[in-house]
Length: 170
Image 1 (tube, rainbow, N blue to C red):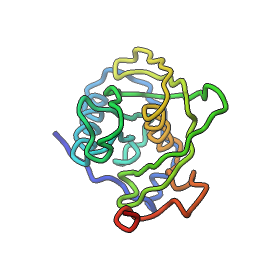
Image 2 (tube, rainbow, N blue to C red; image 1 turned 60 degrees about the horizontal axis):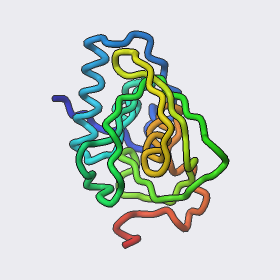
Image 3 (spheres, helix red, strand yellow; image 1 turned 135 degrees about the vertical axis):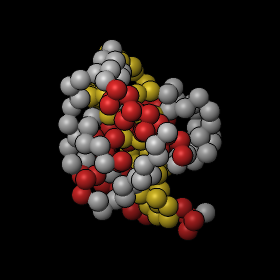
């Protein structure tokens, strides 16, 4: 079990484009995946992207079999390892909802996201993943994949009146 420090907004490594994974099923990849799960769970995250712990690869983990402490009222998202993802919006509809981020601690904002998406990629063994999802599941996937492309959620905020410190907004 390895829990890593999570990089914070301002660290230039969070703004880089992550590199595709070319070898699947390796011991090193399995260890990186386990480190992501351990770190995400220790921080009560809904997901975590490899760049957030300094790994410059297109790798995200998200979901849980139990209620998330940071998002207790949200539906469960199946635990997923997603490698080299692509996201395709299904329709033109967007939804704004509250988001936070382990790399932007203590802050939340209303962020627009596609309402329904199709995401594709691979699991840790290289088997294809192809899912169409909506709601919180779609939001989590878009948020985590943004990290692979150097985008943090504050970069997507449209109305900064709906952005602030959690303890000041209560």
